[in-house]
Amino acid sequence: MRALFINTGGIGDQILLLPTVKILKTRFPACDIDLLTEPRSVCIKELTNLYRNVKEFDFKQKNLNVLELRGLLRKHYYKYIFCTGSSYKANFVASLGKAEYKIGFKKGIFSDLFLTHPVKLNSNQYTANMFTELLLPAIPNHNKEKNELIPEIKISPNDVAWAKDIIAPRIREKYYARKIFLHPGTSKLSIQKNILKGWGGEHWAKVIEKLLDDDKNIVIIIGGKDDEEVIKEIHKNLPYFAKPQNLFDLSRLNMNIAQLAATISFSDLLLCCDSAPMHIAVALGKKLIAFFGPTDPIKLLPRDPKFKAVYVNNLDCRPCLFDHRKESCNKPVCLDLKPEAMLETISKVLT
Image (cartoon, rainbow, N blue to C red; front, side, top):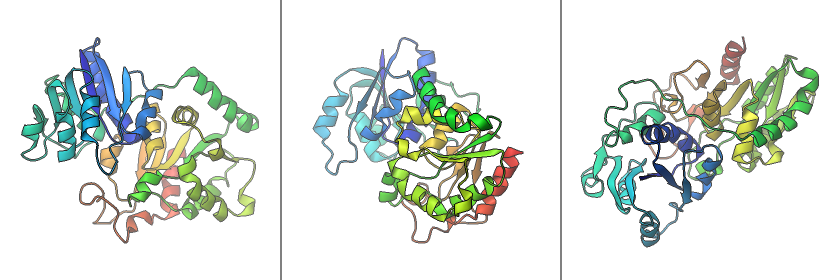
């Protein structure tokens, strides 16, 4: 028996899908499960062994090559095709495959035409739980227990050893210190699409400066090429005296996704935005505090005291992104969180 998941989102969406894949694999251990995703997300195979194959297709191309996509989807016969999107386009993509069950979220009258089993969309919940409702046609009543499902990822021993070799020399003399990791950026693709979820480098700099007043704290900046601009802004706004031996910038290492996850596994606390590292930390069970602008933490963070969301209070317009609009507004006041609010939450978590 074979099953295919079509999930065109980024790494965060791939991690949020893992509980659904695990439930299916647990129910049908002999089932070979494939994933079809965008090129940017193929690296999810480095964080899980649930998939037999991870295939890529560029769903972002201006003129979608329907024949190429149809050929890719019909290369194998699947008993189940699950599509995580909630649009007409997503329903249409699922219809191109060969499967007994073509399952997706119901979107208007065309869902009955494109899908064999449309599922009612309930987006007012943690997204990992929302995805599991796609399994109802295959595994009825599997979701009787309404507990929030926390994703899990796997890290190879080699990547853990690599991260340890990077971190250990920097904390050898301060083994007792709290390792506070900071991933300050969001993906460039989000910014290009005018999906603004980041927090200003000057704000992060003030947070770092305050954290370094306490000798018990070590701050380790992590990130990649997408985060170069905000990290430069952080260093620009840090006063000279705030750059002692307990501040390290690992962003120039250009880690792959597995190395990034292994590095986060050594953290005592992760500070970040609503981004892929936030979902990695959740899947590792690490304490985190995430800045949220226009997106909704109820849908993106499990209700667990280890995971905290910080956002601008008393704004009637937030959260708005994806529910009421597809891109950020002209005056995103939700991004103007004061550093004191972040520091207050950090203080509560650390004590």
